Length: 516
Image 1 (tube, rainbow, N blue to C red):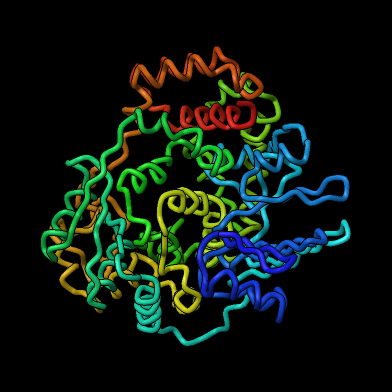
Image 2: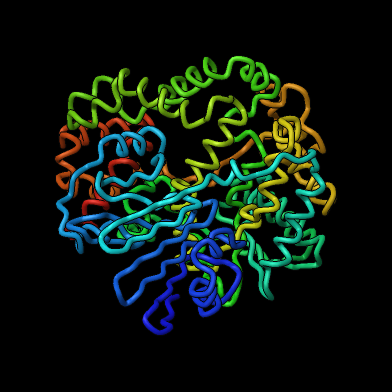
């Protein structure tokens, strides 16, 4: 929403404490620093009639905003394509960023797919006046003071955030996983009765578990199934609002809340950032603690293995890509990327991987998901609460490994929710109050999980193949059309090339946004 007061205009993206007039008044009285640590997830843009621009991003930084400097002018907004058009820049690929997207499904640092257009970092104040730009940024984790470990403080912070954000008509995206169950436990503890939404086919584990929970607590439950036609109908919009950096494999995040038709006055709770309370990248019990004894060696090995595990293109296919993109995906390119990713972990292993999740994955990958939620709902996540983040960061690894804090929060707020099975858990009937020994090994993961994801089937659909063949020429600067044809044939014959086709489809729609 945008408001004007005199010759100043304020635009708020996302949500935070205070109305737009209150925020602008506070800026005029107290300056930009007074808006830098508000509760919420937001970007604030203040423009003056004299041409000054101030952009303030929240500490988590999950409400994207971008800028480019050219000829002494600042071009800014939440859509890269619009900045490109207004600035007069020609399109050029940012090859390292494209390599990140191809291998990680998220960008890193403050990059976009264009080398001269940048994302405003989290926890930042950008000021542009008289043709000069200044940018100051603070990392949220660096500002967290050490404190005694207190898992109950984290539960209390969560409950307070849920109570503050719920409003009169809360909706909740509920799966069979930990994060949404923690939120549901908090809501039930507070006496709230959310409207539940679950995406997936009937046989999906998320659907089965969520339905049982809804029935047990007599809560309204809406099941959303998606069709390929909906994917194609909304693909141009998804590509535009995510600036080409959310691969098509994950576009359901836009589709299912839109189809749910959540009322405008309702809040829509999602579990974004809940993984901060567990070891998101290496949840392997004592193996993670062992790796922490030699963090630099372990980080390098971890990232090299991760990048090699799920290649988007095979070595034989690299000569058929643009040389610059191929260079990002060669063994040498992967090693360079692994070294850069290890540096982003700040020299520690488990804590370092958590920092990478918080400072790179969330402001890039999950921020795109938030943008898709925001297109059709008043999304909220209690896990973005500052007090909760601080309490969780000060917990030792024993609370994060095996999702032990999540289990504790559920047991404390609503122990009845432990009576439903957990994803890939040891007990097929219920969630355990503490992760069992060797919980990460196959023998201990006995509960079968059926995914909601229909991507592999969608990418074998003749309509998908026809679209890719008809539009593959749009990305001729990235991939040889003959290679696209071979990948399609391999996928149709049974080899799973979903990751590759999703990446190529993402690029096709992004080029459509750039050159309609």
